[in-house]
Length: 318
Image (cartoon, rainbow, N blue to C red; front, side, top):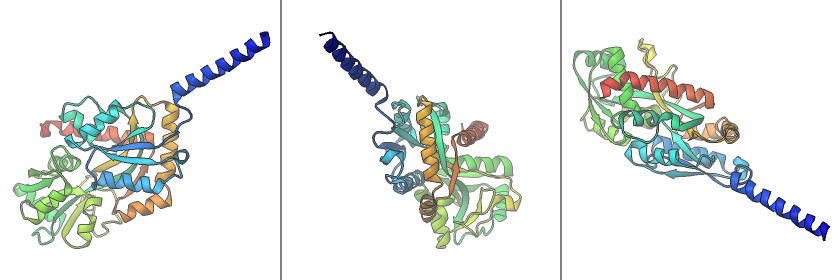
């Protein structure tokens, strides 16, 4: 009887330990698919990048599990960003991060701040590109800048306080130009405004405008990058004209801030493998999206720098 009691006790203790382990950690991470919340409509630059990454990853990473992309648009990204900020910090719900995690808390009422998220990896830096219609009177960046110094030009953006709007304000501040803004809801609307002669120029991410530059629908005057880009090889940089401007849309993956260190480190390593793979780089190139991989620490530095830029422009934006 004594041996039987000991055996029963050992079984109960083992079962209890397993139950506690299962409740606390849910088993080894990951044991199911991961979800990436894209806080914008399908078809935009962030969405295209994330779906390309998910396709390239397949089931070769995350212990055989996949990345599920879910679009949660609304409020300029606020609805989806709020969902991730409120999500359980277990590594299964991630955010497709962009500059709006910084601008939204500054210019809107949100329950989150940039500190609500922990950077995992940056996968894209898409520089801003200044564009005009193909038949515009402005054939070079210098011509447009000189005209915008003499009189106000009409500029289309994809929305108030978006990355292109911030970049345009930085142009005003650093180059002494002046723009009258027409804020839209997307890059596609910017193109329509430009081609319909409702504006003189627009700022879009290079990836979004590359195809239209290539087919001659629009003319790229300059990109805010520190070097020329393969996707728009004939478009000079602002620096080539002596304008010290580097500005663009960063895109990356973040998690809720309280994610356990070991889970975050696992995700960082897996995303590094995916984002530096030849398969992903080639797929992103086909989508006209420039891959610029940064690890978690480097991504945090970029976020911090952009936050400083936004606060510098805050007075102009209010």
